[in-house]
Length: 390
Image 1 (spheres, one colour):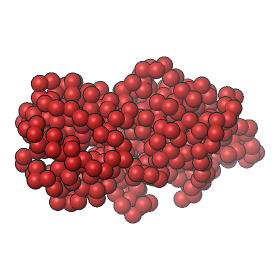
Image 2: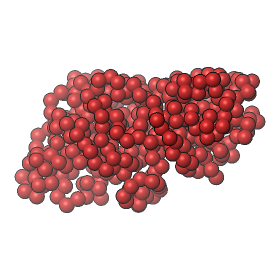
Image 3: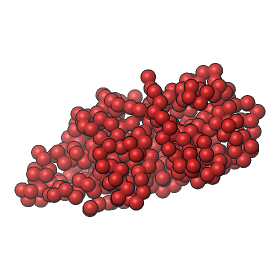
Image 4: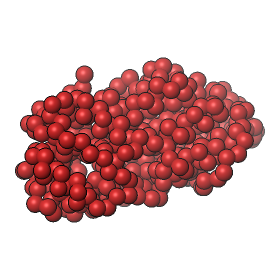
């Protein structure tokens, strides 16, 4: 299969190009037929990927990027397909990178739509710029509920937000796990704090103590001591896998076993990097919630296709990344070869994806949501159960 990839790096703010993208090229009847109502193929048509490909939480971004690439490669391999490129915007998951990258994406007339931004913090910064440029973004992973409340016409996501995950996590901790004294920690990020605050509210009296750590923090000894003195029988951590793994390791190294203090975390920590950072023994018995489908439950031939392409099974957000890209690819293939037309196409999309039926409400939220609980068992993250959501 053919993959066309362009790389982008952060740049200073440049003037936004608000006009529709590109000019058509090519004069083959065969290629014109594959472009639907647009006529000839659009030379240089691209979709962007906006997320972490390097940095502390790159694993999550790479998982998504692989799903995006698979969807694009499958389309490009079709007979007479008008070729679509992928342009990467490597944010490292950092909000401070988002302004330059969003401005660059908005100003690239070849980029018709984006998969991402991947993280909530960078989305808060980037999405206003993308909205002003009329550049549609379909995120497979940014879950802060406030993102869909800003009136950004170009914002869409293919998974449930934390207004679903937070209550489900609280219910799972108190109901399924039977815990009554929960110590809730967040990493002060747009995502981690936003989710942890929802969990705090839904735990009610079961929330016995709150704390906040910082992204990049490595010494959690004071927090661990406070967990012990609080008498907590569970910890919920809102944040990403790098800090979650180190915190978990230090909790277990302090002698607080999984039987004494359950460790529960979120989709941002649902990655093998959690196990690497904590160590296999310390990570055993950890629980994770995610509004994402277990990758092995994805529909069609996705699992087999992904495994054949990348030599390993799909991981967190890979299937959601595929679905997000497929929406944009379907639009371009149907002839939506301006930003305005592609945005209209996404608004009206209603097709079966590999994770769910993909259609959106007027705020860009998916019509179908699910939240799953996972656990670390024998050194692997495996599905435990789907959590009932209201």
